Length: 269
Image 1 (cartoon, helix red, strand yellow):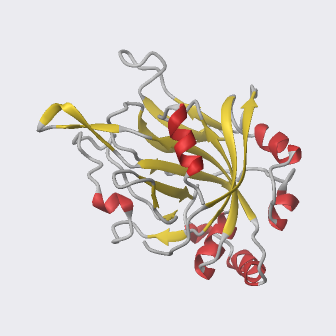
Image 2: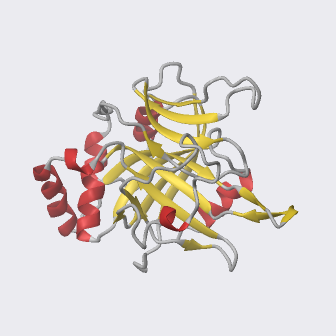
């Protein structure tokens, strides 16, 4: 996918969240062996499993697989007016409202301007079409690509790239066409309404099976799971125009070291 437009960082903040009753949860069911807090990683919304995010192994592929369910819309009314107008900064109102939705932990709150391109599974632009995500030969571990959005690939250096995904919680066929057209008109008028997401960053390694002492670094993969703004993102993709995204990037649930977060943020335009 070549749009020529790289994601731009508008603002960032470190945020620490204490929330005993989050609407959004990362769940790792208990496992008998490894690790103590569970091997599989899930994203739950309103106590329903919504995505399987693969295993926490540092040498397994990055993936996300939607779990079919009746999706309950997340209530973002506390900041909906702010989001619809389009954010220019990350204010205390936005931070307070979002921390009532997401689980306890440390986050990098990022306000981004990005160009979402709608990706159909299996097409040339689909990152997953060019990777083997079923190495284990087990359906539980294999990726099941879905329609999603990608941004321009960010080249860090000759050997390292960052892939960025915006992942809808539900199928595009459930969108309201009148609402999509409403946002298309706003975007045509030069507005940049803001979508809302929670994110993970995975920076993994893979054994070179011809040389077991050698590790091959995967591309950085950052996935933004939409909590609000499905109509906005789709409208922006149709208009091939930028939109803004407020996302809370989880340091706890990402498989990444501090340096990886710094690399991601520094390589936004």
